[in-house]
Length: 334
Length: 290
Image (tube, rainbow over all chains, first blue to last red; front, side, top):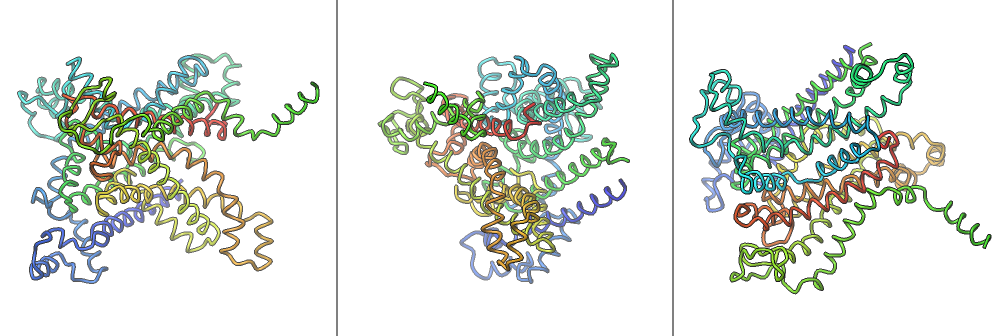
């Protein structure tokens, strides 16, 4: 297993190098002249030459790449054209909001998706199974921006039970910043009003963001459970008088969850992508909304900084998932 | 009578088992039905509606759904039902075109990678790993933003993101086909590699690719609409569903019908593709079907 982990870690190094190469190509090579984009179409040739020199664009391409790489390693993603602040500072400001939303959506997808998958498998070909299946197909088919709009219309406009967006009501003060995660900070500082209000604001975006992934997870759990339940060791356990919850959770689910781990990792990546749309719909002040606002200004340093950070996060999550998979799977462990 | 029965029995036996099973799958049939209805509606758009999808009529702006305007009108008085019907051609066509493009390019690259092997294979697969390191929507967004916000670039961006899946699939199939006797015989006869790939490898790896295409179209339709929603796809006044929702959601608290109906059609179309894809998976992957 050590060899496998070493091989996987070396792949991560390569993939991270690839991520930097791709973001470099997207930000420095394909768009034509980044200097022209920065100063606008009306700038004269002298100004352009000056900006090109400042940005190092008059250097050979490989020198530009290493300069870019050096900047990335130092956390320098450039200056945002829109906010005129370092992109890394902007991203750090908006990161906690995105993390909080994605974390709760991920948690909800697991908490609801796994039981639905188990129920569908155990009650195969019954009304429960059909309902679960339709629920999951609807989940992967629903555009996040549409479910967000329908959710706001229903829960805010018609029923008036949930807020339409933001992290807190205007009349509620944000908790003292420790981590930037409102729920956690509220608990740590004992600010119960902020805790209640921030949880209230999290409900709708979390449900909307998690729905598609919840569907993917429940589908995978159903397929894995059905496969495991058909295996001989389960029949042997049944013949030995083991049944009910013990058979289901101790014997079947533990093995069924192993292939689910991989899907869970991929789901996390999809949640990061989905967060871009969800944050836009709900006015959630996270990295996703920041990047969508930046798109309107063609703010490339911001777009590429976001893309890089998300890709690195995704690579790390996939690494952790694979390592968990190796640990959980006895065949690999041995 | 007995001859007719025997003929019917022979005919039944000769029906392709794949299509036979697909026709027996109620959910796949439902999906096909949904898509057929949307396609028919879009083709019959000039007969079903007398409105021009792009003609501005300020007097009737934000008219609610009524007998005159079934799905209401938008901020410049255009009939939303008409725009949805014309938009169906674009949204569905674009989704299919993206997946077919990615499928064709990915299959050829995958077949070359698997057949040639060695350093070429290593290089191609590592480049694919690079692309797969990004969440697909995030990379598509970055590529589309870099190329410039329009429908063609959005299509290109999604195709680029989808190519690695087909490369991996075609490569895996090629590795198996490469070892078959007929390929070995072709090599012995001195047939050049490019011809072996074209005439012997590609026809044998294309089946799983077609299945993957059927599974991917729904996702591509959603992805194109999502880029449209983010302002990176079709630009107004093009009646593309995602672009319509992108403008409509700014008004939705007061005029709910504006983004709601294009979204509903987008959901139905995606559902149709996914139901068919699920049916195909059920037939071809007995594990998932159990």
